[in-house]
Image 1 (spheres, rainbow, N blue to C red):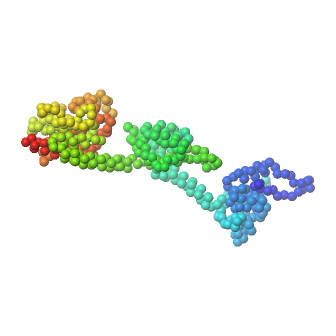
Image 2 (image 1 turned 30 degrees about the vertical axis):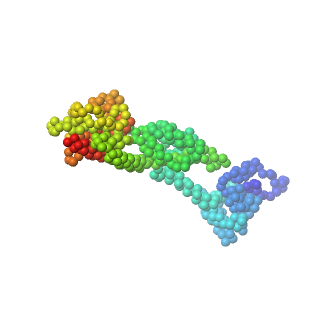
Image 3 (image 1 turned 90 degrees about the horizontal axis):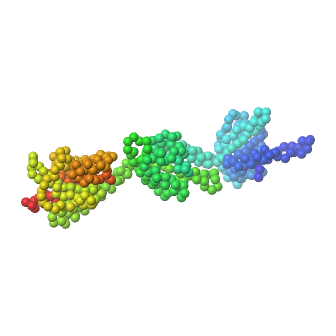
Length: 456
Protein backbone atom coordinates (compact mmCIF):
# COMPACT_ATOMS: atom_id res chain seq x y z
CA UNK A 1 0.00 0.00 0.00
CA UNK A 2 1.37 3.38 -0.95
CA UNK A 3 2.26 5.81 1.79
CA UNK A 4 0.84 8.69 -0.23
CA UNK A 5 -1.59 9.40 -3.02
CA UNK A 6 -1.29 12.20 -5.54
CA UNK A 7 -4.32 14.36 -6.35
CA UNK A 8 -4.59 16.48 -9.45
CA UNK A 9 -6.64 17.33 -12.56
CA UNK A 10 -6.41 16.40 -16.23
CA UNK A 11 -5.18 19.20 -18.49
CA UNK A 12 -5.93 19.90 -22.10
CA UNK A 13 -2.93 18.01 -23.37
CA UNK A 14 -4.05 14.62 -22.19
CA UNK A 15 -4.52 12.41 -19.15
CA UNK A 16 -2.56 12.67 -15.92
CA UNK A 17 0.98 11.30 -16.13
CA UNK A 18 1.83 8.23 -14.02
CA UNK A 19 3.72 8.64 -10.77
CA UNK A 20 7.41 9.19 -11.27
CA UNK A 21 10.14 6.97 -9.84
CA UNK A 22 10.91 9.74 -7.32
CA UNK A 23 7.40 9.54 -5.84
CA UNK A 24 7.64 5.76 -5.55
CA UNK A 25 11.03 6.07 -3.82
CA UNK A 26 9.59 8.64 -1.39
CA UNK A 27 6.67 6.35 -0.57
CA UNK A 28 9.05 3.44 0.08
CA UNK A 29 11.24 5.58 2.32
CA UNK A 30 8.29 6.82 4.34
CA UNK A 31 6.91 3.31 4.79
CA UNK A 32 10.28 2.01 5.94
CA UNK A 33 10.72 4.54 8.74
CA UNK A 34 10.04 3.69 12.37
CA UNK A 35 8.38 7.05 13.05
CA UNK A 36 4.73 7.76 12.24
CA UNK A 37 4.69 10.39 9.49
CA UNK A 38 1.98 12.36 7.78
CA UNK A 39 1.85 15.57 5.71
CA UNK A 40 -0.74 18.24 4.92
CA UNK A 41 -0.97 20.67 2.03
CA UNK A 42 -1.63 24.37 2.46
CA UNK A 43 -5.37 23.70 2.88
CA UNK A 44 -4.82 21.11 5.60
CA UNK A 45 -5.56 18.09 3.38
CA UNK A 46 -3.63 14.91 4.22
CA UNK A 47 -1.21 14.12 1.39
CA UNK A 48 1.04 11.47 2.99
CA UNK A 49 0.44 8.71 5.56
CA UNK A 50 3.01 5.98 6.24
CA UNK A 51 2.72 2.46 7.64
CA UNK A 52 3.84 3.44 11.16
CA UNK A 53 1.02 6.02 11.30
CA UNK A 54 -1.34 3.23 10.25
CA UNK A 55 0.02 1.02 13.03
CA UNK A 56 -0.38 3.67 15.73
CA UNK A 57 -3.91 4.84 14.80
CA UNK A 58 -5.28 1.98 12.69
CA UNK A 59 -6.25 4.16 9.72
CA UNK A 60 -4.81 3.03 6.39
CA UNK A 61 -3.30 5.39 3.81
CA UNK A 62 -6.34 4.97 1.56
CA UNK A 63 -8.55 6.03 4.47
CA UNK A 64 -6.38 8.95 5.56
CA UNK A 65 -5.01 10.57 2.39
CA UNK A 66 -7.38 13.15 0.95
CA UNK A 67 -9.17 14.00 4.20
CA UNK A 68 -9.06 17.57 5.43
CA UNK A 69 -7.43 17.64 8.85
CA UNK A 70 -8.27 15.12 11.55
CA UNK A 71 -11.80 16.33 12.26
CA UNK A 72 -14.48 13.68 12.28
CA UNK A 73 -12.19 10.66 12.19
CA UNK A 74 -8.81 10.94 14.00
CA UNK A 75 -9.70 13.54 16.65
CA UNK A 76 -12.76 14.44 18.72
CA UNK A 77 -14.98 17.11 17.25
CA UNK A 78 -14.47 19.31 20.29
CA UNK A 79 -10.70 19.19 19.83
CA UNK A 80 -10.57 19.37 16.02
CA UNK A 81 -10.17 23.12 15.63
CA UNK A 82 -7.45 23.35 18.26
CA UNK A 83 -5.48 20.41 16.82
CA UNK A 84 -5.74 21.73 13.24
CA UNK A 85 -4.67 25.18 14.36
CA UNK A 86 -1.59 23.82 16.13
CA UNK A 87 -0.55 21.67 13.18
CA UNK A 88 -1.05 24.32 10.47
CA UNK A 89 0.58 27.04 12.55
CA UNK A 90 3.91 25.27 11.95
CA UNK A 91 3.56 26.28 8.26
CA UNK A 92 4.41 29.88 9.09
CA UNK A 93 6.68 29.30 12.11
CA UNK A 94 10.47 28.91 11.99
CA UNK A 95 12.00 25.58 13.00
CA UNK A 96 10.00 22.72 14.46
CA UNK A 97 6.92 22.91 16.66
CA UNK A 98 6.38 20.27 19.36
CA UNK A 99 2.89 19.55 20.67
CA UNK A 100 1.04 16.89 22.63
CA UNK A 101 -2.61 16.04 22.12
CA UNK A 102 -4.97 13.05 21.99
CA UNK A 103 -5.91 11.35 18.70
CA UNK A 104 -8.57 8.74 18.00
CA UNK A 105 -7.76 5.26 16.75
CA UNK A 106 -9.90 3.51 14.18
CA UNK A 107 -11.45 1.27 16.84
CA UNK A 108 -12.51 4.30 18.90
CA UNK A 109 -9.70 4.39 21.41
CA UNK A 110 -7.71 7.46 22.39
CA UNK A 111 -3.94 7.70 22.31
CA UNK A 112 -1.82 10.59 23.56
CA UNK A 113 0.83 11.52 20.98
CA UNK A 114 3.76 13.91 20.81
CA UNK A 115 4.12 15.63 17.44
CA UNK A 116 6.96 17.46 15.74
CA UNK A 117 5.74 19.63 12.89
CA UNK A 118 7.60 21.81 10.41
CA UNK A 119 6.85 23.82 7.29
CA UNK A 120 7.24 22.42 3.75
CA UNK A 121 8.43 24.99 1.20
CA UNK A 122 7.50 24.96 -2.45
CA UNK A 123 9.73 25.72 -5.41
CA UNK A 124 9.11 29.43 -4.96
CA UNK A 125 10.22 29.27 -1.33
CA UNK A 126 6.74 29.91 0.03
CA UNK A 127 5.02 27.57 2.54
CA UNK A 128 3.13 24.84 0.72
CA UNK A 129 2.23 22.53 3.55
CA UNK A 130 3.28 20.86 6.80
CA UNK A 131 4.88 17.55 7.60
CA UNK A 132 4.26 15.96 10.98
CA UNK A 133 6.09 13.14 12.80
CA UNK A 134 4.31 11.71 15.81
CA UNK A 135 4.69 8.92 18.32
CA UNK A 136 2.87 7.67 21.35
CA UNK A 137 3.93 9.69 24.37
CA UNK A 138 4.73 6.65 26.49
CA UNK A 139 7.08 5.38 23.78
CA UNK A 140 8.78 8.77 23.61
CA UNK A 141 9.07 8.90 27.40
CA UNK A 142 10.55 5.40 27.41
CA UNK A 143 13.11 6.52 24.84
CA UNK A 144 13.97 9.64 26.82
CA UNK A 145 14.31 7.59 29.98
CA UNK A 146 16.64 5.18 28.20
CA UNK A 147 18.77 8.07 26.95
CA UNK A 148 18.78 9.70 30.40
CA UNK A 149 19.74 6.41 32.05
CA UNK A 150 22.54 5.89 29.55
CA UNK A 151 23.91 9.39 30.13
CA UNK A 152 23.68 8.97 33.92
CA UNK A 153 25.50 5.63 33.79
CA UNK A 154 28.33 7.07 31.76
CA UNK A 155 28.65 10.33 33.67
CA UNK A 156 27.45 9.99 37.25
CA UNK A 157 27.31 6.28 38.16
CA UNK A 158 29.16 5.23 41.31
CA UNK A 159 30.30 1.99 39.70
CA UNK A 160 32.35 1.23 36.61
CA UNK A 161 30.61 0.74 33.27
CA UNK A 162 32.58 -0.46 30.25
CA UNK A 163 31.13 -1.51 26.89
CA UNK A 164 33.50 -4.08 25.41
CA UNK A 165 33.28 -4.87 21.70
CA UNK A 166 33.38 -8.32 20.13
CA UNK A 167 37.21 -8.13 20.04
CA UNK A 168 37.25 -7.67 23.84
CA UNK A 169 38.39 -4.07 23.65
CA UNK A 170 36.73 -1.13 25.43
CA UNK A 171 34.40 0.81 23.14
CA UNK A 172 32.75 3.10 25.73
CA UNK A 173 33.98 3.82 29.27
CA UNK A 174 32.33 5.87 32.01
CA UNK A 175 34.11 8.23 34.39
CA UNK A 176 34.17 5.84 37.36
CA UNK A 177 35.71 3.04 35.29
CA UNK A 178 38.34 5.38 33.86
CA UNK A 179 39.41 6.40 37.37
CA UNK A 180 39.53 2.77 38.51
CA UNK A 181 41.63 1.79 35.47
CA UNK A 182 43.98 4.78 35.96
CA UNK A 183 43.56 6.08 32.40
CA UNK A 184 41.52 8.66 30.50
CA UNK A 185 38.22 7.63 28.93
CA UNK A 186 39.44 8.17 25.38
CA UNK A 187 42.86 6.62 26.06
CA UNK A 188 41.17 3.35 27.04
CA UNK A 189 39.19 2.98 23.82
CA UNK A 190 40.38 0.16 21.60
CA UNK A 191 43.23 -0.94 23.91
CA UNK A 192 43.68 -4.64 24.72
CA UNK A 193 42.74 -5.37 28.32
CA UNK A 194 46.20 -6.86 28.84
CA UNK A 195 47.64 -3.35 28.45
CA UNK A 196 45.37 -2.07 31.21
CA UNK A 197 45.47 -4.88 33.80
CA UNK A 198 48.63 -6.62 34.98
CA UNK A 199 46.76 -9.31 36.94
CA UNK A 200 43.36 -10.90 36.44
CA UNK A 201 43.14 -10.19 32.71
CA UNK A 202 42.89 -13.90 31.77
CA UNK A 203 39.93 -14.44 34.09
CA UNK A 204 38.20 -11.28 32.84
CA UNK A 205 38.67 -12.11 29.14
CA UNK A 206 37.43 -15.65 29.78
CA UNK A 207 34.26 -14.24 31.37
CA UNK A 208 33.70 -11.80 28.49
CA UNK A 209 34.15 -14.57 25.91
CA UNK A 210 31.67 -16.77 27.75
CA UNK A 211 29.08 -13.97 27.85
CA UNK A 212 29.47 -13.34 24.12
CA UNK A 213 28.91 -17.02 23.39
CA UNK A 214 26.44 -18.12 26.08
CA UNK A 215 24.90 -15.00 27.60
CA UNK A 216 25.11 -13.36 31.00
CA UNK A 217 25.93 -15.51 34.07
CA UNK A 218 23.19 -15.88 36.71
CA UNK A 219 25.09 -13.94 39.39
CA UNK A 220 27.93 -11.38 39.64
CA UNK A 221 31.51 -12.65 39.76
CA UNK A 222 34.22 -11.42 42.11
CA UNK A 223 37.59 -10.94 40.40
CA UNK A 224 40.94 -9.92 41.85
CA UNK A 225 42.83 -7.61 39.49
CA UNK A 226 45.82 -5.29 39.49
CA UNK A 227 45.90 -2.17 37.33
CA UNK A 228 48.95 -1.17 35.32
CA UNK A 229 50.28 2.33 35.52
CA UNK A 230 50.40 2.48 39.30
CA UNK A 231 53.71 3.49 40.86
CA UNK A 232 55.47 0.71 42.74
CA UNK A 233 53.93 -2.72 43.21
CA UNK A 234 50.36 -2.77 41.75
CA UNK A 235 47.75 -3.14 44.47
CA UNK A 236 45.35 -6.04 44.02
CA UNK A 237 41.71 -5.01 44.04
CA UNK A 238 38.54 -7.10 44.15
CA UNK A 239 35.89 -6.02 41.65
CA UNK A 240 32.39 -7.49 41.83
CA UNK A 241 31.49 -7.71 38.15
CA UNK A 242 28.25 -8.18 36.27
CA UNK A 243 27.99 -8.82 32.54
CA UNK A 244 25.31 -8.24 29.89
CA UNK A 245 25.45 -9.47 26.31
CA UNK A 246 24.54 -6.64 23.93
CA UNK A 247 22.64 -7.34 20.72
CA UNK A 248 21.41 -4.98 18.01
CA UNK A 249 17.70 -4.11 18.49
CA UNK A 250 17.40 -3.30 14.80
CA UNK A 251 18.16 -6.79 13.49
CA UNK A 252 15.56 -9.55 13.19
CA UNK A 253 18.06 -11.98 14.69
CA UNK A 254 20.35 -10.90 17.56
CA UNK A 255 23.65 -9.55 16.28
CA UNK A 256 26.27 -9.41 19.06
CA UNK A 257 27.60 -5.91 19.61
CA UNK A 258 29.75 -6.76 22.61
CA UNK A 259 29.40 -7.02 26.37
CA UNK A 260 28.35 -4.53 28.99
CA UNK A 261 30.73 -4.91 31.95
CA UNK A 262 29.65 -3.30 35.23
CA UNK A 263 31.93 -3.51 38.26
CA UNK A 264 32.12 -2.25 41.83
CA UNK A 265 35.23 -2.21 44.02
CA UNK A 266 34.56 -4.42 47.06
CA UNK A 267 38.17 -4.82 48.19
CA UNK A 268 37.62 -3.44 51.67
CA UNK A 269 34.54 -5.59 52.22
CA UNK A 270 36.42 -8.70 51.04
CA UNK A 271 39.32 -7.95 53.37
CA UNK A 272 36.89 -7.55 56.25
CA UNK A 273 35.19 -10.80 55.29
CA UNK A 274 38.51 -12.63 55.06
CA UNK A 275 39.66 -11.24 58.40
CA UNK A 276 36.41 -12.36 60.04
CA UNK A 277 36.77 -15.85 58.55
CA UNK A 278 40.39 -16.00 59.68
CA UNK A 279 39.42 -14.91 63.19
CA UNK A 280 36.74 -17.62 63.36
CA UNK A 281 39.20 -20.27 62.18
CA UNK A 282 41.86 -19.26 64.67
CA UNK A 283 39.35 -19.22 67.50
CA UNK A 284 38.28 -22.73 66.54
CA UNK A 285 41.92 -23.85 66.41
CA UNK A 286 42.56 -22.52 69.92
CA UNK A 287 39.47 -24.34 71.17
CA UNK A 288 40.52 -27.61 69.52
CA UNK A 289 44.08 -27.21 70.83
CA UNK A 290 42.81 -26.74 74.39
CA UNK A 291 40.71 -29.91 74.17
CA UNK A 292 43.58 -31.94 72.69
CA UNK A 293 46.13 -30.60 75.21
CA UNK A 294 43.82 -31.52 78.09
CA UNK A 295 44.21 -35.17 77.08
CA UNK A 296 48.03 -35.05 77.38
CA UNK A 297 49.60 -36.29 80.61
CA UNK A 298 52.97 -34.69 79.86
CA UNK A 299 52.85 -30.86 79.96
CA UNK A 300 55.63 -30.65 77.33
CA UNK A 301 53.58 -32.83 75.02
CA UNK A 302 50.63 -30.49 75.65
CA UNK A 303 52.83 -27.54 74.63
CA UNK A 304 53.73 -29.19 71.32
CA UNK A 305 50.05 -29.98 70.70
CA UNK A 306 49.24 -26.31 71.16
CA UNK A 307 51.81 -25.46 68.46
CA UNK A 308 50.53 -28.18 66.17
CA UNK A 309 47.12 -26.52 66.03
CA UNK A 310 48.56 -23.00 65.91
CA UNK A 311 50.70 -23.73 62.83
CA UNK A 312 47.72 -24.71 60.65
CA UNK A 313 47.16 -21.87 58.20
CA UNK A 314 49.39 -19.55 60.25
CA UNK A 315 53.09 -20.40 59.84
CA UNK A 316 55.46 -23.01 58.41
CA UNK A 317 57.65 -23.60 61.45
CA UNK A 318 57.65 -22.94 65.20
CA UNK A 319 60.40 -22.83 67.82
CA UNK A 320 60.28 -22.70 71.62
CA UNK A 321 63.27 -21.33 73.50
CA UNK A 322 63.16 -21.52 77.28
CA UNK A 323 64.93 -19.04 79.59
CA UNK A 324 67.65 -20.60 81.72
CA UNK A 325 69.53 -18.66 84.38
CA UNK A 326 69.00 -15.11 85.55
CA UNK A 327 70.20 -11.68 84.48
CA UNK A 328 72.84 -10.87 83.40
CA UNK A 329 73.55 -14.52 82.49
CA UNK A 330 70.15 -15.07 80.87
CA UNK A 331 70.31 -17.80 78.24
CA UNK A 332 67.81 -19.29 75.79
CA UNK A 333 67.74 -23.07 75.36
CA UNK A 334 65.95 -24.68 72.38
CA UNK A 335 63.21 -26.92 73.78
CA UNK A 336 60.83 -27.53 70.88
CA UNK A 337 61.39 -27.13 67.14
CA UNK A 338 59.39 -28.09 64.08
CA UNK A 339 61.30 -30.24 61.58
CA UNK A 340 62.72 -28.33 58.65
CA UNK A 341 61.03 -30.41 55.94
CA UNK A 342 57.55 -31.12 57.28
CA UNK A 343 55.10 -29.20 59.45
CA UNK A 344 54.50 -29.98 63.09
CA UNK A 345 56.75 -29.39 66.13
CA UNK A 346 58.62 -32.12 67.94
CA UNK A 347 60.61 -32.50 71.13
CA UNK A 348 64.27 -33.07 70.17
CA UNK A 349 66.20 -35.85 71.82
CA UNK A 350 68.92 -35.22 74.41
CA UNK A 351 68.93 -32.95 77.41
CA UNK A 352 72.18 -31.13 76.96
CA UNK A 353 70.64 -27.76 77.90
CA UNK A 354 73.14 -26.00 75.62
CA UNK A 355 72.12 -22.40 74.96
CA UNK A 356 71.34 -21.14 71.45
CA UNK A 357 74.04 -18.74 70.27
CA UNK A 358 71.87 -15.93 68.99
CA UNK A 359 73.69 -12.92 67.47
CA UNK A 360 73.24 -9.46 68.89
CA UNK A 361 69.95 -7.87 67.89
CA UNK A 362 68.26 -11.22 67.24
CA UNK A 363 64.43 -10.98 67.54
CA UNK A 364 64.18 -13.79 70.14
CA UNK A 365 66.35 -12.14 72.86
CA UNK A 366 64.73 -8.79 72.00
CA UNK A 367 61.32 -10.33 72.65
CA UNK A 368 62.41 -11.52 76.11
CA UNK A 369 63.97 -8.18 76.97
CA UNK A 370 60.98 -6.15 75.82
CA UNK A 371 58.41 -8.61 77.21
CA UNK A 372 56.44 -8.17 73.98
CA UNK A 373 56.14 -9.53 70.47
CA UNK A 374 58.76 -8.74 67.81
CA UNK A 375 58.34 -9.06 64.03
CA UNK A 376 61.18 -9.46 61.52
CA UNK A 377 61.34 -9.88 57.75
CA UNK A 378 63.96 -10.26 55.04
CA UNK A 379 62.00 -7.63 53.11
CA UNK A 380 59.78 -7.81 50.02
CA UNK A 381 61.48 -8.83 46.80
CA UNK A 382 64.59 -10.18 48.54
CA UNK A 383 66.70 -12.38 46.26
CA UNK A 384 66.56 -16.10 47.22
CA UNK A 385 70.28 -16.26 48.01
CA UNK A 386 70.12 -13.19 50.25
CA UNK A 387 67.04 -14.64 51.90
CA UNK A 388 68.86 -17.87 52.75
CA UNK A 389 71.78 -15.95 54.22
CA UNK A 390 69.38 -13.83 56.28
CA UNK A 391 67.60 -16.92 57.68
CA UNK A 392 70.72 -19.00 58.41
CA UNK A 393 72.39 -16.06 60.17
CA UNK A 394 69.47 -16.13 62.61
CA UNK A 395 69.56 -19.94 62.97
CA UNK A 396 66.24 -20.46 61.27
CA UNK A 397 65.36 -22.83 58.39
CA UNK A 398 66.81 -21.45 55.14
CA UNK A 399 63.35 -21.06 53.58
CA UNK A 400 62.37 -18.50 56.25
CA UNK A 401 61.51 -14.99 55.09
CA UNK A 402 59.26 -13.68 57.87
CA UNK A 403 59.39 -14.23 61.66
CA UNK A 404 57.24 -13.39 64.66
CA UNK A 405 58.43 -13.85 68.27
CA UNK A 406 56.02 -13.85 71.22
CA UNK A 407 57.12 -13.93 74.86
CA UNK A 408 56.12 -16.86 77.09
CA UNK A 409 54.93 -15.60 80.47
CA UNK A 410 53.10 -17.34 83.30
CA UNK A 411 52.28 -16.08 86.80
CA UNK A 412 54.32 -12.91 86.22
CA UNK A 413 57.46 -14.74 85.12
CA UNK A 414 59.10 -14.82 81.70
CA UNK A 415 59.62 -18.45 80.73
CA UNK A 416 60.95 -18.04 77.21
CA UNK A 417 59.93 -17.15 73.68
CA UNK A 418 57.98 -18.87 70.88
CA UNK A 419 58.99 -18.03 67.31
CA UNK A 420 56.73 -18.54 64.29
CA UNK A 421 58.38 -18.62 60.84
CA UNK A 422 56.96 -18.18 57.34
CA UNK A 423 58.42 -18.81 53.90
CA UNK A 424 58.21 -16.62 50.79
CA UNK A 425 54.84 -18.10 49.79
CA UNK A 426 53.20 -16.36 52.75
CA UNK A 427 52.71 -12.70 53.56
CA UNK A 428 54.49 -10.81 56.30
CA UNK A 429 53.16 -11.09 59.84
CA UNK A 430 50.69 -8.32 60.66
CA UNK A 431 49.47 -6.84 63.92
CA UNK A 432 46.49 -9.23 63.98
CA UNK A 433 48.97 -12.14 63.67
CA UNK A 434 50.84 -10.86 66.71
CA UNK A 435 47.61 -10.89 68.75
CA UNK A 436 46.98 -14.51 67.78
CA UNK A 437 50.61 -15.48 68.50
CA UNK A 438 50.33 -13.94 71.96
CA UNK A 439 47.19 -16.01 72.64
CA UNK A 440 49.04 -19.18 71.63
CA UNK A 441 52.08 -18.12 73.69
CA UNK A 442 49.93 -17.72 76.80
CA UNK A 443 48.62 -21.30 76.43
CA UNK A 444 52.10 -22.70 75.73
CA UNK A 445 53.50 -20.81 78.71
CA UNK A 446 50.88 -22.42 80.95
CA UNK A 447 52.01 -25.87 79.80
CA UNK A 448 55.69 -25.02 80.35
CA UNK A 449 54.91 -23.68 83.81
CA UNK A 450 53.26 -26.98 84.68
CA UNK A 451 56.24 -28.88 83.31
CA UNK A 452 58.64 -26.76 85.41
CA UNK A 453 56.65 -27.27 88.57
CA UNK A 454 56.56 -30.99 87.86
CA UNK A 455 60.34 -31.12 87.64
CA UNK A 456 60.61 -29.21 90.89
